[in-house]
Amino acid sequence: MEGERLHPSHGGDDTGSGPSTPPIRVRPRHDWFLMVCRGFGVITALAAILCIAVNVLSAVRSFRNGLDIFDGIFRCYAVVIAMFVVVAETEWGFIMKFSKILEYWTGRGMLQIFVAVMTRAYPESFEKHRELFLLQSIASYLLLACGVVYIISGMLCIGAFKRARQKKELTRDQAIKDLQDLERRREELESLLIVDNA
Image 1 (cartoon, rainbow, N blue to C red):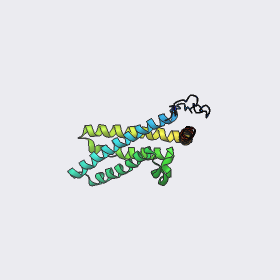
Image 2: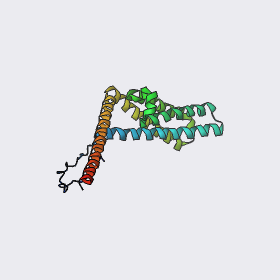
Image 3: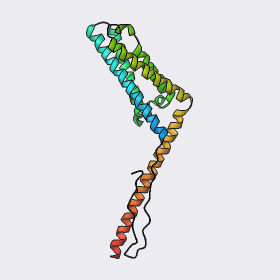
Image 4: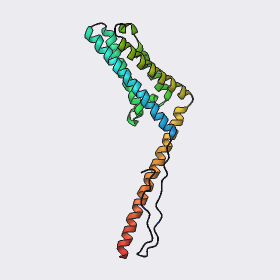
């Protein structure tokens, strides 16, 4: 595991096979930039989930009371698009493979702003439901703010910088895994030598 010594140290070899190689140590390295990006992604996903909840409640209210069927359909579309926002924040490779535009922060921010606008639409239908109106406002403005941050960050090429750091992190993790495999193989060979010399 990163940050831990892979194997305990060995003393001299009593069988005469020579001293053991000192254990490989891996120092912990935390990329604070990626941690901040992940934290912001969680906040964005929570804002999108809040928008989904608001739109679901609005759609149920519209269909149940028969107030406005078109508003209910509109809310259903908002729910579906908000789900894409949530999935985009997971950065699941399978989804990103088919939605390249979501890989870029500017495109992701535009989608978030679109969902925020859809959530905030038709405020007059909530005049008699102040709690729902307040929840709608909080969800829409929070996601709107996240979308603006994404667009500005995308224009500053921070998204490309993040992808480069992620690639570097994956390369480091793979190198650590290779070192662990080599250390484990060395231990196996030393055990075989001990058995042969016994």
